[in-house]
Length: 539
Image (cartoon, rainbow, N blue to C red; front, side, top):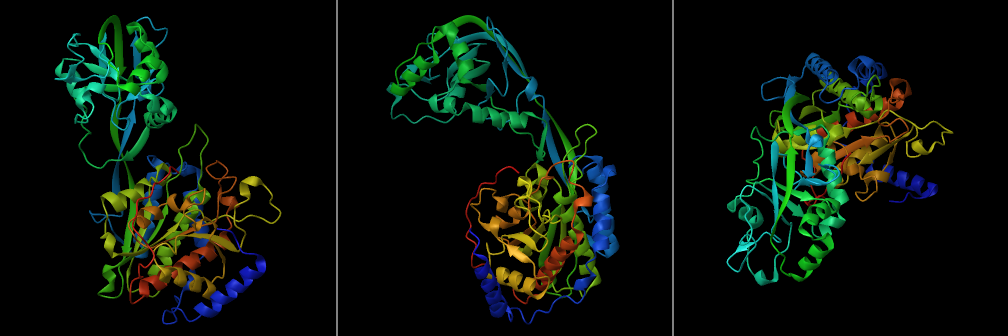
């Protein structure tokens, strides 16, 4: 969305002030708005971004120390623990998978082993690698069909062997036949094969690099929320997809080339079934262990007997990146700034006039791994009914300003001292957008910049912080953000670069907007949001 020229921005601002001056006139501002304290913000952030916490990586001791600090502060403010056990910790099990990078496939006579994630992957790349150690001779069975009209296994013995066949396609003789999805695997299993090696079709061969990159990402030690205690079921027979170059090597003992196989598949021509004396070895392993992190959760009960069953959620993520040797990533702005701001919001809400609705404080873990903590809260274990959440105000990176004269390219999109990016206030309800605009005009009068509010913006920031997991559920959201900068995800994201005065102004804006939301007689009308599927890119 392009920005209007300066004179028109001024006229637009005047129009907003005039038209919206009376909006929410029945909603006063919180009486303790000026209680938001630069001193308190700096105190919290100086601890959270300290070297002793080591960057607050999701599965680290520093993350757990930060969690205890946040919980202790909430308890001191008078909040109650919101977890199912009454504590302030929503315990989240994560699965760590390792070992895939050591898995190898060897072919007798080949100059070197074939490596998992480069030369072969599981047919289902999202599945867990089996712990497999297998050596056997190979047979080629073309399309892998065993059917009354044509049976590739009729002339070869697959018992105890490794089957090589096409990953897709059927011979012309089976045109119009309805076959189950796993007919290849069933046929190989019924004929006694121990494993399958699958030759990619032309489309799959062209997209091999992308598929292999996906597997490499998950082969590196990585964590994800565990949906259940049960391990995923292993397929009845291990089936591995070969890269185009590996497929050429494995077809060679049968005097075939990948081009010949692709040509046959295009026409549905028959392919021979052949046994080879070459031996193949498959050694794969992937270990799994469960580790835990935690969202920090607390509730300040509302004053209204009826409306206190509804919640305004204030959120920020307190996790950051793992250390690299002796180098730590303090994460002062990302997202120590948002975490300190939400902690200060928790204090001023508790010390001021109690709002009608309840305030839910949510410090998310695992955001840096793909919004995992907030996703666990919304998708697996909501601690309050999602339909009872009136709005989510999410804060991620509000601590930086671009100094005058800073012409570094990395800081080009960093806001100045009087601006903040807002994302999402108009996505669900016009009433929330209007309340946000009017509250800003009546309080801190920051310039609200909607550059990233466009869902199609190349940076796609609407999808890149914890508010997204609420937004996708149709819950109104506002995301506060001051911009990416040269220190983003670097060891130089330190406390000395934080603009605490600006951070306090933004915190006041969030406080006033959330306080008014918590005191509205009616919930926001959801007159904008339309449910639809959206892809969430990696952060």
